[in-house]
Image (cartoon, rainbow, N blue to C red; front, side, top):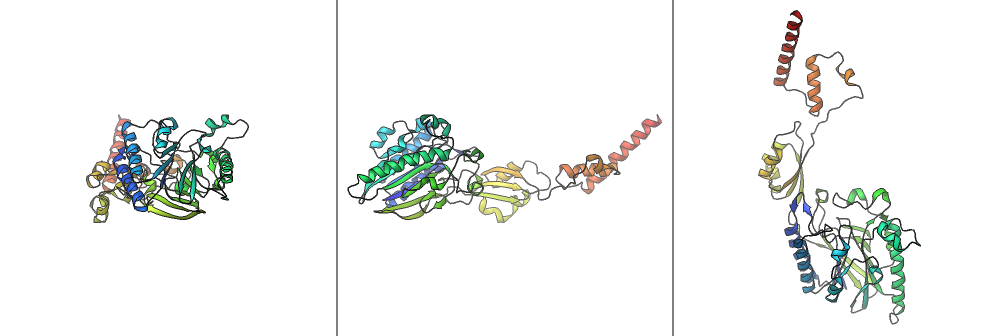
Length: 398
């Protein structure tokens, strides 16, 4: 059996105010092409199908088209809800969709009833675990301490392992049945600093919601969602990442999914399948004039651009000027290449025994990140200070 592991479609998400729906359509079309090319039997979507709990009509249209075309390409679908999704909305009419080979798992207890899909070697049980918020789930099982995601998913996996063992006992002489877990969580084996980006809603406050990969011991493969970059925790426990870049923190990370092949006795191979990147993300760091004039940046003119300006003085109208060359410049930062250095002393101590001209020059250096007055400015400062002193003497004399 061939399984294409995907996650975090985030249908409806914007990128710095720009719609991503057209780009996502292109990528999902390519995903359908990959299903045909590789003879995929099952497409897995491990949560965060939508970006919002109240998706628009257009978002539903994107999902409906993708599901219809995946089924038309010959693959079944197993999809779970994530922390961005509304389980109720995503699961609407899931009972009838299941009859068409599109299995959407959103109910809190649905993980105990696997989606069973057979190949030439027999059945494979797909246990979808919808996103289970501890504060919403614990009251259903007051006999257990279920305060963290580790405890909740550990509880769910205990039930799954018991169900898998019972099914293996009725497997007609088989010692075990093959199984796949689909879950949306933050596994503690992932480096949050290295992998998480600003678009992954925080489900790890204080570390109480981190889930060790060991919680998922037992099944042949574990398809995880939530982290937007592909990540391998173990040979059988992986994140596929999102199909689009949704943050400049994801620039350079590949987009695609894991092609998983199960043989008669379990996991055989896992290969990466690339999906297209409709518009590349680039972070450009340089003074404004260099970005606007240098041929070195010509190749980035069609990219999503994050411009980091290193000018010592903040340029005027920088975004408009940047977008004249980089139409898809989406964000701008001002990060001078020098910083003012100040000892840990008081303002009185800093200006003590300094002339008025030196005090003004020091103020300009402070507010301009270490850049003092130019020669012209020094001349103007001296003229103003001289005039002020003359006016003061005249007032005293009168």
